[in-house]
Image (cartoon, rainbow, N blue to C red; front, side, top):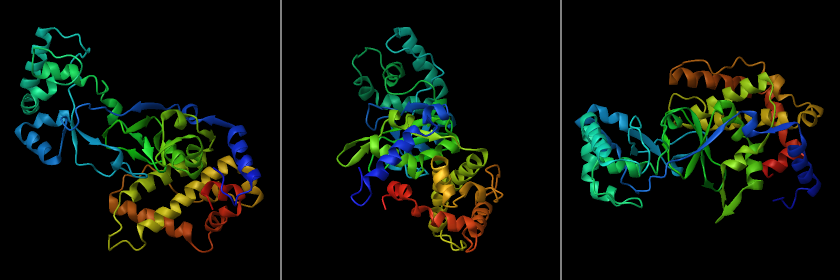
Length: 361
């Protein structure tokens, strides 16, 4: 996938550098785990919109326990998740579920427990009983939640904590690699998969130009879109980051997640959010480039990490949104100041042939 105006030797140098540098596969570097999304198998049956969600909760407050915010691929934007208007009816996994091993008595007990503890959800399932019983490969004489438990277990993972913990959500098919950081416990559809244990550092690395370039070289395509699988993510070569690089990358990732989910229409915002976001992304890419091409960048006098260390930034602050936006804007103003060495270094990154290769310029 070389550009016609990029020397073939530069392309080969880049590939060699990424493969032979002191790197580890992403999966080993951060000890992450990959999990698929949920295959509902029943179309819209197990999904309700916000209006239906509110109606079920109004009938019985305990319904909240079984209604989980649900996202599909279109909700995954770069950095953030666009809040979906869908909720998944998620069977309570406190019941022992072993697919196709229920006696009639056990099914009746499950049905009773659901009706007693979650009557609104039970009534909803009873309303769709005939459709529920038509799912799967086996039809049983018993009706109600017992059959639902048996059939639902085919389409969902048994441990809901997998979805509720912070995770990176990645679209399986996209024109460009698209991933977001989920801190709100969304349950994700099988059109996406999640990366557990990567944290903000993993999010910053996978969102970098280098990582996305790697994916675009190895992923197969379908109708001009990339088909991204966990294997390709797992094998992205990662060069070790020092403590300053890690801290700054995590801070920038946290900032970019916040900025991406914020509105550009705030009249009190002195600098457009898109401008701050673009500069922070450039800053993040500079830090990641330096981890791969340290010697090359230092020969050009590009010390992104050294300059980044001068900023008092961390992800520990628990500010409200207005305070956080104010803090981010101030960091931007300082880092973008005309005579700040960091600004000059970031603007000089395209002077490197390899950076131009990655960024397609």
